[in-house]
Amino acid sequence: MSVTEAPDLKSRLEPYFAFVGPLVMILMILLFMGVMEPARYFRISNLNIILLDAALYMPMAMAMTFVITQRGIDLSIGSVAALTAILMAFLVKGYGFPAWLGVLSAIAIGALLGLVNGLVITKFRVPDLIGTLAMDLVYRGFALVLAKGLVLARFPELITGIGRGQIPGFVPIPVVIGIATFIAGAIVLRNTYFGRYTIAIGSNPEAAEMTGIAVDRHRVYAYVLMGAAAGLAGVMLTGKLNAIQATSAPYFNLHVIAAVVVGGTSLFGGRASMIGSFAGVLLLSMMINALVTLRIEFFWQSVASGVVIISSVALYTWLQKKDRDGSGGLITALRTPDNARLLRLAGGLGAALILFLILGFLFAGQTVPSG
Amino acid sequence: MSQASEPIVSMRQITKRFGGVTALNDVDLDARAGEVLAIVGDNGAGKSTLIKILTGVFQPTSGTIELDGEALAMNSHADAIERGIDAVYQTLALADHLDPAANLFLGSELTKSVLGIRFLDNRKMRSEAERVLADRLGVHLKSMDAETSSLSGGQRQAVAIARAVYNRNLRILVMDEPTAALGPQETARTLKLIEVLREQGLAIILISHSLDDVFAVSDRIQVMRRGRRVGTVVTKETNRQEVLGMIVGAGEMAQEAM
Ligand SMILES: Nc1ncnc2c1ncn2[C@@H]1O[C@H](COP(=O)(O)OP(=O)(O)OP(=O)(O)O)[C@@H](O)[C@H]1O
Ligand SMILES: [Mg+2]
Image (tube, rainbow over all chains, first blue to last red; front, side):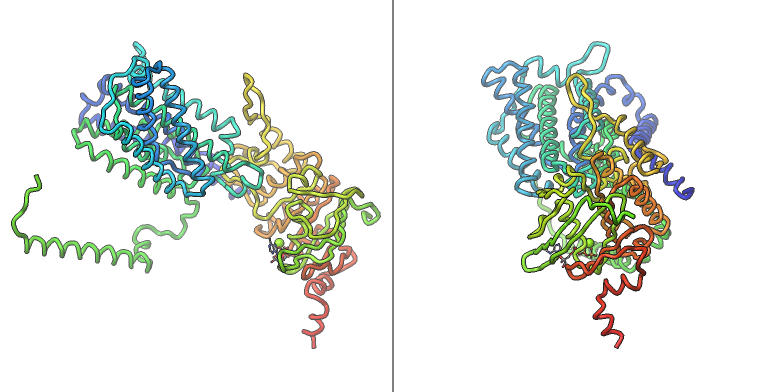
């Protein structure tokens, strides 16, 4: 029995990796910015900007934690947010709905769109990746059809309050909303059937089915929750900008997935960390704010999100690999025949590209300015 | 000994066909309280099919099942559980990322009501799980917080068994090749669990390819061959040679000898 002591300790610590990972990275950003741009990064007003940005993603990251824990994915949330926000704008501005009803309707519409996603995945058996990607096109298309190129602006105070209101001497209202959704999410994950079955489904779908859990129904629930959270995010975004258009929120899905995954929730299912997702959201907002503070071009954000996803998934997979015997480091790995072949392929492609570039410069003619 | 007592469950003339394949042909089975009945036979002999009929997973093409002398008709595994018949399979239905207590109660969680809303009662489930594991199986896990994936094969088996045993109605426990994936030490532990449960008066049906295990714990051995029951022997009154002969088929044995 004594042999099992060591892994016991490791498995005891494992749940905390999730939180420690992003925390270490947050500290690294703080240190880095402390050296590079302390004056501009550590202002109260900048802290507020970071929190406001993070708050927008909190409800979605909470819901996405459930979806991903069930081995699902939702790539449609940006379009769901945009479409619900536009529908809310029509209801409030076009039909004179009171603001609070507009907000509730937006959340309900989001939930409904999530329900459609869930049914497409569980009833039509379309794999989640393709299903939600296709629905993303559908929802975005509807948003474009409805709003054309219009920017819908100037909303009632309630909506701007939800998006950027400030509790005097305290944090912004959206931050309170975001943290509240996370607390609710943590309770649901630990203390309800839905939370328990979410982990069971992600951990071992066959076992979940065998013990009589309604697997498909609980998967639909997760997508409904995701849709409702995206609807809420649509309201928050509208309020924050006091404007909305059909092309808003293009990068929500990857940003939210990055936040959840960097927080230690496993893309392979079964392992959920609410607090990790929270830390992940903060980390991403701090990182993007740091890029802005350093005056790095906006489009690098997309590069950064992608790199965060790949590196954190790879890192957690590596951490969770139980057996590292005989791996013997990078050099031995490169010596295996398969990897040697891949290396040759990479070398060949690189050589071909270099050849093309050289030929291109040799035979270069007059350049044609595109502008 | 237990031979004298009445069987809890009797299966009579069970036949099961899957399309053209006759998986079971006119098979009988008796299980008694406080007794371990081993079922042995070559691959495809029909062992799993037979116990899946007993646990309500399959319905027989023909034949009858009697529980306490009354005819028993089951439409699902849930029906069987309700009547006190449950099974533990080799591929344990455990969710590795949940702790042992959550696994033990998976699908039938204990709840409490807070402000009129049903919440899971994690504390109660944990203490109940600890109690069942300790009292019924004599198993003490080092940590009830650790994920089930960190448990040894035998401990995982104990969690799966505890799930079946937690049902107070349980009278017949079927185990389909429980030791197939276990090393010698964990196998010994699992056999010990089987003995503990027999002491508590359960009827145990153990399917195994290991004659070592079968001779170690069983009271009677039922031999299956090509969908038929070759015979049932009392473990104390037989030996490996005889059982092996029945499994392979005495006729073929003779042919090989020539
Ligand atoms: N669902 C099914 N559909 C069709 N045929 C089946 C089905 N289940 C079992 N069979 C057939 O019934 C026969 C008996 O299978 P069974 O699984 O009961 O054997 P077994 O004795 O448990 O074998 P093993 O020792 O390999 O587990 C086999 O010929 C098998 O192919
Ligand atoms: Mg079998």
